[in-house]
Structure formats: C-alpha cells, structure tokens
Image 1: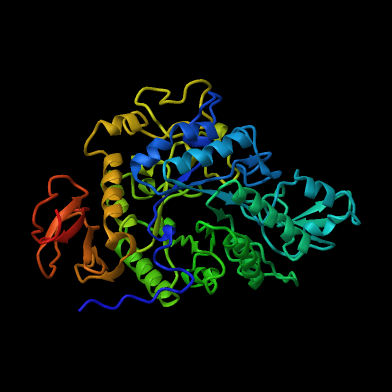
Image 2: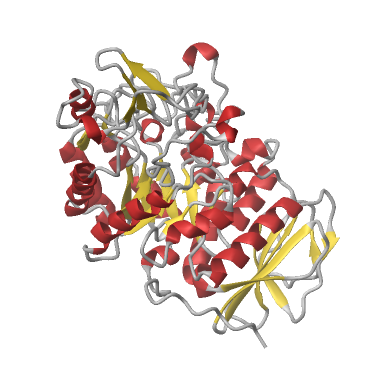
Length: 521
C-alpha cells in the first residue's frame, strides 16, 4: 500500500498555481538587449518571451529594474515605483506584464524591503538633520556595535559627518537599512507593494527576507567578531512580523498573488519558520543545493531533511541549483554536461517548485571575467554573463559591446544552435518540462525514497494512480538498481533508451525517468 499523503494546510490547498509551477529567473542586464546599448532591458525581455513560453515555464521572476545608482546591481533602489532608464520606462514594465500574461506566464518582481539606496529621497531627508521627520525611517546610533556587513563592506555602521551619528547597513554603505519598527516605513513599503500589484504583478521575490528584523538592543554577536556578516545568520522574530504584514497586503488581492522569500540562512529548520502558520511566505528558497557538490550523499541528506521538516509543517518546498548570486551548477560540477543534464532531471522531478536561472537550460558555465571588466562588488559577475541567442558573434546582442563577456562556447550553446540539435540541453529541458506539465505525480505528488546503491539517488513520485520513478547514478560506472514491477524509460539523460523497457541498469552519470510499463505511452 502506498504511504498516505500528508494533509495540506487549509490556507495552501494543492490547487494553488505556484505549487505546480516552474519559475524562470531573468537577470535583466543579461537576458536580451533591445536598444543596442550592450545592457539587457525590458523591451529585450518582451522580445524574447517566446523562448520562455516554448521552454514550458509557468512564471518568470525579474530581478530589480527599479531606479538605482547601481552600486549593487539594482538592489540599491532610489525609487521603488519607477523603472531605471537603463532598463526602460514604466510603460515598458506595463507592456511586459501584459505580454507575459498574454502568453499565460505569471510575473514576479523583486521586492527589496531591508534597505534602499543612500540616494533615495527618504534617506537624503533622514541624514539631513537629527530632527528631520524622516530621521527614524532608518537606523541611527551614537555608537556602533560589532555587526559586519556583507559583500566585504566591513563594519555594518557608517559615520555620517553632518549629523554626528552612525547609520546601519547590512550590505554596502550605499544601502542604508530601513527601520521596519517605524510605522510610516511600514505604510510606505506596503504602498510600494500595492503600486505593483495594482499594475498586475502576480507576486514578489522578497530579497533577504530574514534581515528586516534586528535585535532592538543591538547586542554584539560573536559570529560577527569572527568576521561573519550578520546577513548570513540574522534570524530575529521581528522579521516574521514584517512578513505577516506583507502577506496581509498580498492576500487582499485576487488571483493568488504569491510571495517567495530569499531566506539566506543555510538551515532548512530555520527557513521553515518563515512560512509562519500560512500567514508569512508562500514559499522560501532553500539554499543548501546551491552549495552542494555533485555528490549523492550531500543531495540525499539535503532532500531527506527538506522532506522531513517541510512535510511535518505542511509547507511547500522550492528547489534551485543556480542563480545570479552563485556559481552556475555546471561550473560547480566540473564543467560536465552529462552531470548538468542529470541535475536538470533532479531539479524538475523533486517535490516542490523548481526555479530555473536563465541560461541553465543552455548548459552555460560561468564566464571568465577579467578584473578590469568586473562590475559586481561581491565578485558574482561570472554567473551574470549575457545569454547567447545566435550562433554567430555577437550572439544576438547587436550594437555596443555587452556589459560582460559571454560564457564559454557561446556560439555552440546559443539558443539558435541548440534549437537545431534534437539532443541539445535546450531540447532536454523542454522535454522535461513537457513531461512535468503532463504528469500530476511530478507536479504535485508525494516523494518516497527508494533503496539502491549508495551512488544512486532513486525515488518515486505518486499522485493518486499516477506515478513515476527517478534514478540518478552519480558514479562513473554503470550500476544495477532493482525496482519492483515493470517499468519503461520515459526520458534518459543519454539518448537511446526512451520508450524501452527498464532493464535494471543505470549507466554512468545517467538519469532515468521511468513510468509503469502498463501506463500511457
């Protein structure tokens, strides 16, 4: 008898669109350039939406495009309700929302609640004098504590000569932290959410959702004394109050608007708490897979922990292998295309919502960026290289030289080249997404680990009578994986086995998706 499926929380029924969705992350600077200035823009995204639709994704998440001095690639916002001219206009944003919806794609924007730019009018007023009405919109102190900032920025406190106090910034000094204990800040930031929700955005990815709440006593922390930035472990109860307020704003809208949180604490147990009791995040990123080498023990441990902790609380997992802040997973896996294909099978068949970072469907690696061309203060330029659309240089980026160099093998891995190759990485992702969309077991089903050799990760997905089995061999040699019953190969990372009966063998570094032999072809 199959194990009983867990009862879902009443506030999150299995029919919620985001549970069965695949989300495609767009890094706007590097997706597509419509005006020829070498930097991707909103019109470029609109012109290439058909690529995402053909891939089979259900939603897109667009990293920040708001007005910004770009000290931290748009995460230092100077106007939350306007588009930076680098990316286009507010009319371009409205057009993107419309065009995405016309293709059946949901659209998520970034929401950055922890900080603004130091050039935001709010902070300009706050630092004008100690008695300015907006002084308490940010966090000021006479004496700093030992908190450390991220991105190598040193102390989290910067001295302001004019007013004779320090202001807090958990990231760059150009990114002062908002004071979410101050009601006018809460009201203003809720207004930002409503501004975009009213324009039709389907939800938000919340940047560093765990950082908005801080210790009101500003006590020193021993991990900061050792040089660790506070943002890597800050986990204060007030952050949950902030999220509950944000969730109330979003829940007031129809059509199931969604919140996805970046809770960048490498602890699944801590991440689970940011779902609240169905009144905080709908989903939260869980980042251990972003650190994981291509190792079955590491992945098995991570998946087991997610299943144990999240099933117990009836919350929905997410899975991500690459993003704009981390080395691409193919690069982390030694450049192996075979491993990258198996990783795609893993990503798209686990229980939860997968996020695909632009370019992983092409099998891209990080670009080699010479020190003279580096832009990011955190050294994350390699994974942010422009997407190659056409085989011939400049790969669909006509006009000025792109802001960063292309990744390795840009021509051979371009969209144009891979569309012509039936066994390319792009076609592999499309096949996986077609299978996922047609299969309730893969979208919504239970997850059950199956026995096998230690080098093999094998599991069953089941939803009612629909079921699939996934076998991924991490070893450099073939292994036998015995399964009860008769199975047929639906998809294989190495071509040639699709449609054949499963003979019990999983080849070296191969992944198989199996269906019952008596099921639908």
